[in-house]
Every structure is written in structure tokens, then in C-alpha cells.
Image 1 (tube, rainbow, N blue to C red):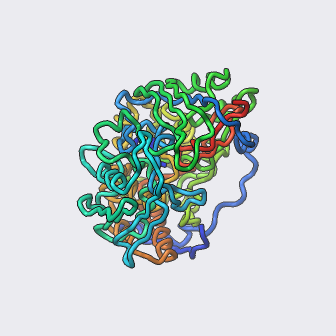
Image 2 (tube, helix red, strand yellow):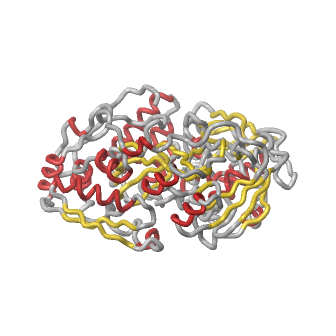
Image 3 (cartoon, rainbow, N blue to C red):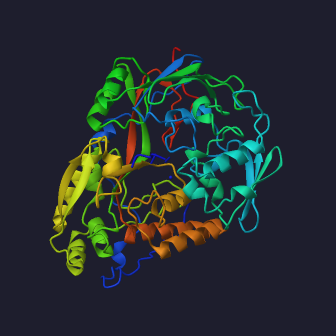
Length: 538
């Protein structure tokens, strides 16, 4: 789903490829080596999306000015507490910093922690913290704040989505702060990828003892400080002059809550706002925006990961042969072309985005004949299933219809059902056996695979439970050799493709509506660079 946590977050070096095909489940047909093809499909022909701008306006912004952002309506319970599942996402990167962030190359980079190192077994991690950092209220940032932030996330009363990721690893009582600029994190079990887990947007650092007030005050170490905030409504932030990385380019940012996507787009075209936050424009609207005098597009490559989750606890998807057939039956390139006009990348049922360190390039072949064979062996020769969608996201229904059309070649009859948008993520997601959803990319591979696919995870939307897969993830976390660890994560990706319940047709480029006056727009994992963004002629 859109990350409620992305919300539903926010993921190669030359790595030996492995064909790790296992036999189908007990009683199933063992698939041959053709299940995985090395490399990708042939070069795609030009698509309508090629005519859209590839990036926003370039050049240096002028110092000063106020950026106006239109954002979708949110819950009346939304909060500025970054650990919460109801965080006001658009504000977080402006008000706070993490200990560790994701760098432009997709690997962990320093933020409030200048460096970090494990012991030999990757069981204890030591973080050296940045000096000279102050919170918006003038307090100095210290290791006590870093330790408190982790304890706040892990506190069951917080209800943080990231608690499910960190709790199996971190005992809050064992955190140590030997001095004001050192944080020591002993882990319950070795994890060579632990710093990547702190890049999640729930891990922004808050002041020691601030749990009761942080949702209102927004006091952090970020480039902007809070002026006003209304849950599900308007707000304003102003430049923090004493930010440790320097003053931001802008003087202020105003946030407006606009309920309808078309209304947000119209406000941009009329020059009433400068940027549409968390809005992936459909192709028709994107063309209108790109051809206007006032606005253009910022195209964020592979920013969203679209998926058709099959509930593996519900028939017919309890049978791995049916799940394999549902994947072999359709052509991801066809879905990409129809649903996105080519503005993205075919997923081939691997949720790890291309370009992510450790991405497995091998993918299954589109093979409707093999799909028919598997369905016959499983006793579902004339399979007919409902696929739920809604207007919640403009891509859901085109994706569902494209899948329906493509899977028909394998004899699979898909009935597309449209559900209400306002209750889609309470009545449909993780309740119906087959439906459409999406996530934001930007998660490191360890977090993505553990949070969304490990058995028992609260975000495991297919309810897939595979002990061998979970054990593979545990082995990867314990492995301190970088090359071997990447191979293990690639084996885990193969397991998701071969046995898991997630159909991943494509990664979508997010088409962000933006004023032609905006300069310095750079985005990763649905967050952009608040420090460097600005306006021409401010």
C-alpha cells in the first residue's frame, strides 16, 4: 500500500548470478532452468513517456522566497512525531535528521553520525556522532538524544512501524552512551546491515524526553523549524539559521492540503502552488503539466513499486504452482506499456529496484504455456479470480486491466473489481486474495526483504511464511563478507520470485508536478532535499 508507515517507505556491483531454482511445492512440477533467464529483456522501443521531460529545471536557485507545496489530505490524527505510523511525511526531512541517510549511490551515508563501525561479528555497532549540532530550541545534540530516539521507536506505546524491524535486534536497555558523542548499540544477533535500518524515515532523531510533545513541536536538527502545523491541514516552516550543514536556500515553505488530485494539478497550472507532494500524475495530466507555461515535471526514476499481492493463506494462492502460474502468465513489458506508457521499468516480480546494490538481474520468462501446465497440475485449469482495484491511485486500474488482458493468453480469467478509494486500505488491502497496491522505493535491500516478506511481519501483505527464506535472511545478516552477503540477498530475491505471493509488474517513474521557477529539486524515497531546493527569481 502507499507507505502508511510509504506508509507503506522510502531500494549493482558486478555480482555472480546464481540460478537457485528449487522444485515446486510438494506434489508440484519442478520447473526447469528456463524459470530464470540471465539478464533483462531486449531493448524496448520508444514509448510515449519518452516525450515527457526527464528532469526539472536546472540551474542555481536564488536565495530566499517561500515555496508553496500542495499535499494530499491526511488523517486528522497525523503527527510530527517521525516514529509514528501517522507521520506528516512532507515535514519530516525539513525538521529532522537521521543518524544515517541513504546517499546518491544507494549506500548508507553520514548524517548526524559521522562514522560507524561494527565489532568482528557485527554484533555491536559504535556510532561516532557529529559535534556542533543544535536542536531548534538551542539544545545541543548528544548521544543521549540518539539513544532516546531508538528507545522511543521501540516503545510499544509509540506504535512505530519501524519497531517491528528493530525490536528483534535491539534491546533498548542495553544501549550505551559512553560519552556525549558516542552511541554503542549491542545487537541480539549479528547484523552486518544494521546501519541501513536507521535510514528509514521513522528513524529521524528527536530530543531526549520529547515523546509527549514532539508530535506538536516538531523540534529537530533539520534545515527548517516549525512555525505552524495543522493535522490534515495547512502549515508553515521557516529556515533554521543555525543548521549544522548551513542555512537552507529558501526562507520558508507553506503547506496546503488539497483533497483532489485534479484540484492540486489545477492549482499548479494556475501558479497558486509550486510543487505537488506525494502525487504521481497520470500520463494524461502529466502531458498537460509538461506543456504548460507555468509548470513542468520532475521525473523520479523507479520511485514507486507497483504490486499485485496474492494472499498465500487463501485459495487458490495457497498452492505455489498457482502463484508461479500467475507470474508466468503475464508480460510485465505489456503492463508497463499500457499502465505507464513506458514511464518506468518492468519489475519481473522482483521487488528490489534495478540500481539498488545487490539487485538480481535474472528474471522469469513470460511463458503462458508453462502457466497453463502448472495450473492443470494444480487442478485449476480454468482459473477465474477477482482482482480488486480503486481510484486511490491513478495507476491501479490501468495496471489491473493490463494484467487481465495479458494473463488471458494463459487461460486465466481475471474479473476486475473496483472498490471505494476511501476505505481501500482498511477493507481491501491484506483482506482480499488479490488486489492492487504500491510502495515507495528507497528501502535498503535488508529492510525491504525483512519488512515486507519475512513471515509474521506486520507489512507482509501476502502473508507468505517460508522458513527457508527467513533463514536465508538471517544468514545474510550474519555474513560480514560484503560479496557473499550480496549473493545471499540475491538468493532471497530468487525465493521471492519463485515461491512468494507478490506479483511485481513494474517500477514506476514518479511524475511530480513542479513550477518552472523551482530549482534544485532532488528526491529519494519520496523525500526531497530541503536544504538545496529554491526558486528562480525568489
